[in-house]
Length: 212
Length: 191
Image (tube, rainbow over all chains, first blue to last red):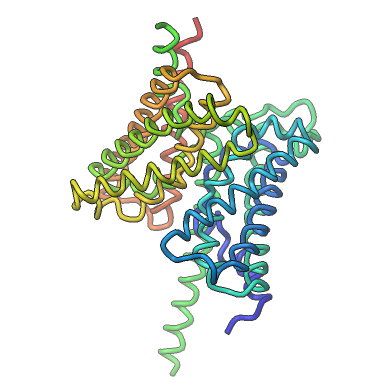
């Protein structure tokens, strides 16, 4: 039996939606050419995920099984419309940069995945904890990718120059290929860490076997 | 006429949905393991796009001018019902293909390429004919990307790659290199 805090924590690192499950890639790669865009996208997704998880979990006994996916999609689409109009009103510049990718949060597989795999089966409290964890994990991933691409691609972070005027920006990092390659490298790093850990566990196990 | 050709080439190569807009990545990485499945999924997606193009144009012209805030919800309903229809048709006519596509067939609903296509077509104010051409170009581009990737991945399975790099990390870097190659097409229209 996992406690509520476990549900919250697992989404951030151990089951990070992007780095471990490789979900929600489309918005992930498209908007992470600067740290500020990444954060705005992350917050919008956060709002949609937490809101729809709450509603789905509240109505989980009322929604018939056969049409559940359509119901989830409509709930998600409602929240995305709210987020879209709110962003447009509060930060019009960022909204313009994100462009079509705010409405596209609807089809972020990570959000639908959470509804199907978790919120539709658990109580409201745990569904919210899970949504918060996953959403924070998603923001973290967006920020890491966006930050790295901005630092390498334009030598700045949040628009503040880091390396002075002599830095030659690596423009390809801001362009689409840079997104793919950078995420590939990050996933590579995660794989490498995991393999190291597996090897270590294996070594310890064999050591114990020989000692015992 | 020039305009139509331009829309087609641009959505097929220059602004390829996968490589320059990052749309439809989930099936792109999920289904591109085998060449045949990739072609079929690409064709199914193109068909859904085509129907979506026609439906969204009617919605935009006759209904959504009265209620713009319903845009997103009505689009997603159109996409979801088209996918349901395609799913039933494939199940009836080709059960083998139905099995091969598996979970990725219903997941076309959440394929950002389809909804993204509907939103782009609306934002750019395409007419019905332009929308249909755009659907063919975008769907063709998506199929092209899937096929390229599937071919490369089939080759990859037989070559000696270190264990760490195998899987998604490798596909991601290959996609990056393909995307670099596709950037070359942007020179087509500079003159």
